[in-house]
Figure 1 (cartoon, rainbow, N blue to C red):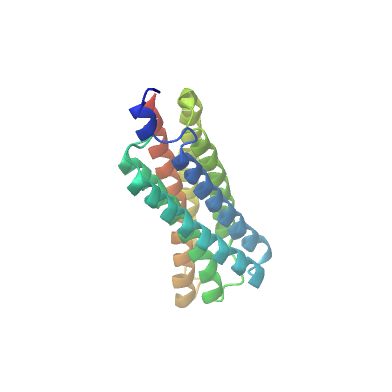
Figure 2 (tube, helix red, strand yellow):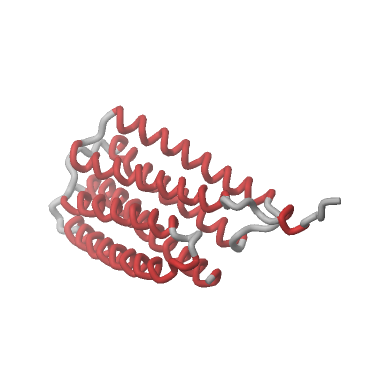
Length: 213
């Protein structure tokens, strides 16, 4: 009679679905960041809007799948609170980027400041780096690399803060109409929040890896 292995029954599968879902969500964030950067360079278009709505839907599906998997998993590869936080925050990053992009159309903004363009480039780099950090989460031996990536992410966040402060200084210089100040401030804030969230996820992922090592 074959021996029944209880642990093999209750443990999650080898491929660890949560890691795959995290990577998918990080990739979605990267794609929407790239679209925002493209808008800064070439302007908003119906094609870009269609892509954004597609990625918004993909992001919603990703978070639903992650939470559904979390709810039905008896044992998880990471702490449940960490899984939920990473998944929810990745979705927030995606939503903030998309909201900023769509508000460009709503606010009828067609001229973009240098600070908006700098924010866009910084966001793309942060999203790419976030993907690298998450990709290495499964490999406990890569904690040193993840630490280095997290340090670089912190540098990006700090640079993003500097760009945001410069943008605010320019915005309240008196050369903009009141309505335009409101519009631009909202766009700046959404992207700044997305950048901050990238670092928070990066920091959480590193802390998770350190606990697992």
